[in-house]
Image 1 (tube, rainbow, N blue to C red):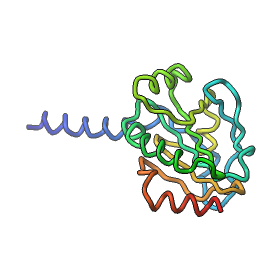
Image 2 (cartoon, rainbow, N blue to C red):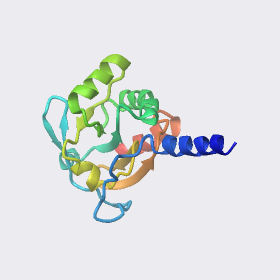
Image 3 (cartoon, rainbow, N blue to C red):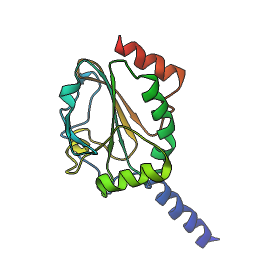
Length: 172
């Protein structure tokens, strides 16, 4: 019985750690809401850099994720629906993968899963450190003026009517 209980405890710990980063990214301090979002540069899958500051005038959904993370994979369909619903509006989704395999791992995942996101890489982990992520998925909502409004830890139904209404309201 003790051996079974020990296996259950070990299994629970492993499950809880399944989508945490191997090394928790350390930010200079706790990231606060209603302050300017940290300036970062990430790379598109074709290698083109994207500076977050270039997106002023758009609402940004900045999502940190990984192909190996079950909760990340779970929320991707709702993110795809959100991205479609927000097409033509001043909105930009930036899905930053923390996969060590980089572009090839992401492209392979998209090919086999049928999923697709506006995906970016953070090869030196500077973006993840600037936002102080401790696991994935973690998502940040940034308004049109570059102000960090919300931090969401864990998966979310991004296509829910409440979320869509909130984000659409920010675009006006």
